[in-house]
View 1 (tube, rainbow, N blue to C red):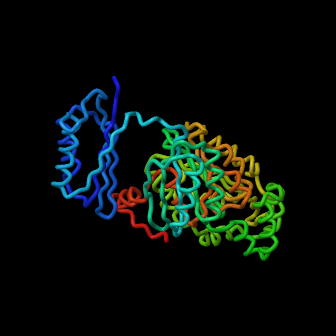
View 2: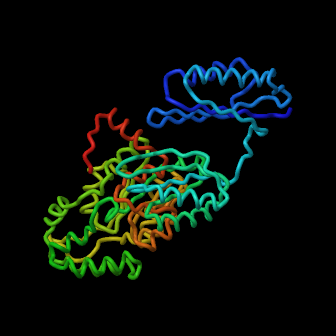
View 3: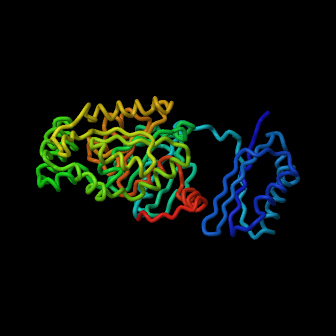
Length: 407
């Protein structure tokens, strides 16, 4: 049987009962519902309904579909709405290849940025099927459902435009796998917290400048991390172990960190930290945030004094990837359902191994290697890459009586 479709689009002031009235009208005709989409922006409604009907159903003025057309127009007029109706021939709407989510983050998000992103999508021969706002503060996040594009090609094109427009853009395949990310593994220094712990320790030891220089070389990938760690730790020799308590008080979480962890734990995600820093300080973060798994280096302390050495296996670039795999096994979660977040070269292996690798305010080498990059200073922006809108986060916080004062 030949199938045809009728697209009904209502626009105008929103009010209770519009959707009910339209479908009550449609219920009197031989049509089936093929698709629905409704959006309300500042009290202004756009409601689209696609119905399918047999192609041999008469469509003239006195026909069944003609009567439907007239009845819908009258109902719209009664409700003070405008209506547009158009017919088509394919109720399946020609399924297009390459269905993707394109997430755009801007602070602020300028019209020129959206023009550039939309232009690149069109130039790639793709179509924007749907647009939704996930957040309007502290960053604006817009998610576009795009079809008809090769993900790798579109990702490369949008990365260029994102750099030009100074926004963040993520391209991910749609489907169940996007919602299945269940283990988050995050770097600590300059990611979960706003400092490098070894530099905080070095400031007390009077060797901050030298340690910072070696740290920067390692983060850029210019120096082997294990060797750089040994060199820096050696400079801490002689510090009393009481220094750990002082530095713990100096740790500052990245804005949005508590919201990110709290929200994902609420959704039954597992959360892990993996650090080239030290257990004497990361253990406090584990207790404070309720983190499930952690891995970090341990500074050797003898007779209450730091020896300038590290105890046990060093958590370096390969070690972080091994930790991610270990945490996934412990949680019973496949690697494809993990997310790795980091900023430095020693995060590259775990970012590559994870199902989704995110560079957070990262060095250029990490931004180039990761699946996507976030350059706004708010860690909870990562929720939007997982399709979690701010309104739902705030509603859950309000329901649980959580008072947020992170910013």
